[in-house]
Image 1 (cartoon, rainbow over the protein chains, first blue to last red):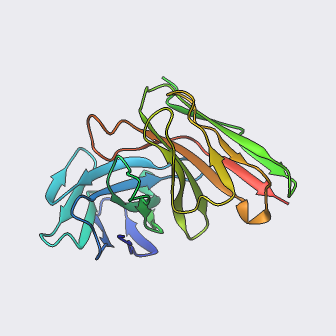
Image 2 (cartoon, chains in turn brown, cyan):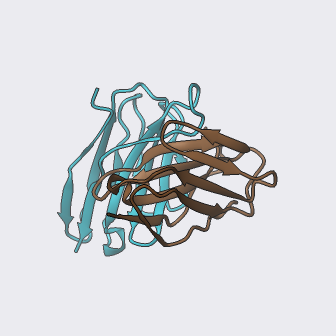
Image 3 (tube, one colour):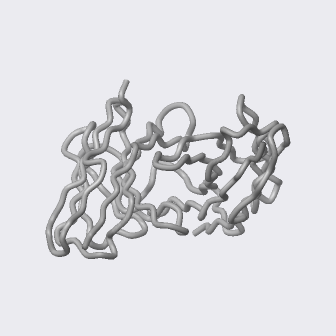
Length: 114
Length: 115
């Protein structure tokens, strides 16, 4: 089952682009890659999800190479409000009897400075 | 809409006592999940339910039980709490039949301290 590895923390400044990479060497064929954002005392919130290549939405981009063993979340022009913990999740829904893990990484704590 | 609500917000519980954490969603999602979040360990899946009437074990199910009598509610029960169950518990739901395949919606969490 896929295990994910992310940097523990990152620092950035307002207006910069931030790239957070997650490694998932044992990703399975039917696994998707999903990123969540979490603020203190709140539940995680969905940011973006992809299977391969590049996905972009109004808040982020997700880059996934052809071998799918890693993924990079890109946050353009971050602001102070982007200070949060970012989690990479590898898995597939719905869960089945033989696949009982949704693997969250330990998270990357992003601090955005003025 | 409220989305997902959890109760209580926080609780201090004596070891050996039982407790049920409540989770209710109003989005009519077919799947629901319980996670625990411990410092430095991210979120770990305890139990899940793909649809009303069915449940499954996650990564760390020991010491916990769940039921799914209807679509909206997914209570988590600790039969005899131990200090290692001190954690923040998050309930989540997803409608994996439509839209984004893996998007889960999370509740605000319950902070449980077992002494």
